[in-house]
Picture 1 (spheres, rainbow, N blue to C red):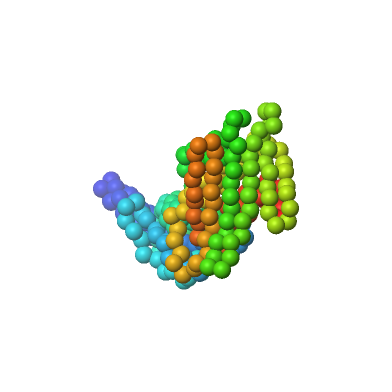
Picture 2 (picture 1 turned 60 degrees about the horizontal axis):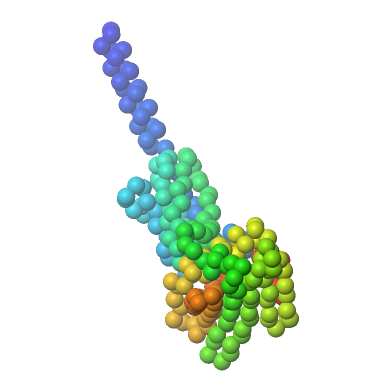
Length: 232
């Protein structure tokens, strides 16, 4: 009798384990710009990993994809954001359908020194923003400098001249914005002759960054709106 009870216990544990292992999950993903809600019709860089093993899935285009018959566990989804970085997001799947958005505008902030973060009381930072095409050049300019202990920014564009004191929380956002422009320089678009060319000058240092056209982000617009609240 004891052997029979023991056999039933083993069978019960085996069946319970098998049933748990057979629980299925679906990953139904959407890769989009989470700020604007726009999708990228050419998003082809999606990969799903179970540890080191790449998982098969269906890419429906326009950022939509799904993987079926998956286990209830944690997977890693990798994709390219609008700045050219590879983003890896861990997702914990539960039984049934798992609807998950992945943000194209999510930014992996690198630990690098920027021109904006290097502004000091002795040197003025000058930034030239140029939109360059085969037939036209559109240029705006900005200057960052100290008045006493306060950091100020002056902008000049087609709408006029604008000036404002830069608060510490705004400065942090501007530093991230410059880092985005630096990272996005890796992107190339041979189908378009339009380029955004940014030139930084601080003391004896000078650097030029070139970005191709990005649908939902550009350095000048992000910079200006961060400081003044709207694009003018």
